[in-house]
Image (cartoon, rainbow, N blue to C red; front, side, top):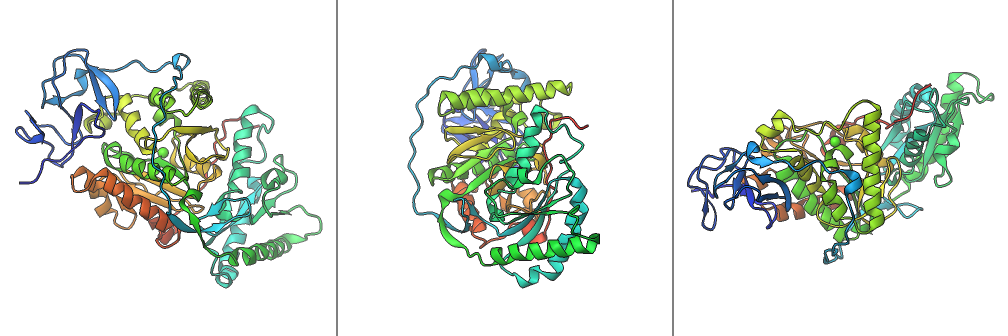
Amino acid sequence: MNKPAYIHTTPKDNVAIAAGLLGLHSGDVIMENISATELIPMGHKVALKTFQPGDPIIRYGYTIGTANCIIPQGSWVQEQMLQIPDAPILDEIKFQTSPIPSFETLDGYTFEGYKNEDGSVGTKNVFGISMSVHCVAGMANYVIEKIKKELLPKYPHVDDVISISHTYGCGVAINAPAAIIPIRTIHNLARNPNLGGEIMVLALGCEKLRPETITGTSTKSDILYMQDESLTGFQDMVDAAMETAERHLKKLNARKRETCPASDLVVGMQCGGSDAFSGLTGNPVAGFAADLIVRAGGSVFFSEVTEVRDAIEQLVARAADEDVANKLIAEMKWYDQYLEKGDADRSANTTPGNKKGGLSNIVEKALGSVVKSGSMPIVDVVSPGDRVQKKGLQFVATPASDFVCGTLQLAAGMNLHVFITGRGTPYGLSMAPVIKISSNSKLANRWHDLIDFDAGPVALGEKTIEEMGWELFHYMLDVASGRKKVATDVLGLYNDLVLFNPGPLT
Ligand code: CA
């Protein structure tokens, strides 16, 4: 007989989750002296103790609600049996110094990366063409097609040529306070470690966003103005762009991968198209691997403000110091106000699909989302469009929209992306490898050529979170080294970059 499949997320938890496709049946022994007393559907909670009214129900190590009736040990903990905790009020959250958990550092793990002059390391070798205004986007596409056909075959060590396209640059209130977000995003995208500092900026000439804002001083960039009076006709402009491009391609082609410590990784975590298993398999496995990267000295960040807003107390409790706690609260407040301005709220209610899948309330959903950040202290908080400065686990404030979040994570300096999905999405980015993790094997089997890593075996009890977390960690080092290619890189399946522009258009 197969062992009944269940998931117990942390030792503190007083509920477990039925994992197998058929759930748990009456009489199934879950743990020592605990048996299921009724059918518990897949993804739903089973009581590991008898709850009295008022008792906290703990999942992911945190209280997701209190019992509002007697819930006998071994029975199904259903949504209506839980009293939902009040939504956290940001002004009332106080930082309390809690002991920072000690952890063993991991030494000796390396990957083969491209070292940059600014100290960052690339996992790909990509030539980026940025632009100061969308007016030149057509020209960029034209030139890129020509480069791919005529130049790229001569420079085999360059992985790709990409457009850092956006719809910003003119017709915008460039001095509005919120304009800082798209402007610094465009600037920091050009600084992504995978572009090696070799940037060509296509400009028009009369636009509001000055091209120098993009290049700053840290990239060896060239700016090409289409309105340059020495250029006559489109062909002249294309010739100038091709000549400039070839200079950069030569330099990029000369780069070689070198052995770098795992501490040079800057990993962005995100989820999209989540299902009930995301918080049970994919996110905990990704969280375990995130801890390993941090223990190896690397940078890991998670994002998606609206997804974690309801777990703010837990995040504040993990802040390394009071400054980080205050920054976390400030980013959540900023986003609350941004939503209010648009006459929306965070629509924090769980969907019918979530509830059917076993998520009782938004607290449980948010905790499932936060699980992908692992268990390390949060050492810094980065505003949208800014770049991370530190090693360790950080929060990069972004919307939850996959492409907007991914774009801001690239601007934050991400050189490797981990993306967890349950329903499935073909999401991919050309600037950094996107490791797509499925939360269930059904998806991984159906989308065998789109999913890179299947965390489904955790749900079936075939592998532990720890085992799969280590597997993912090694897979990440392989992908960062170019030894393994993610599905979207094999297929050339990429989404557009999408700016977060909270400011007004004119
Ligand atoms: Ca997302």
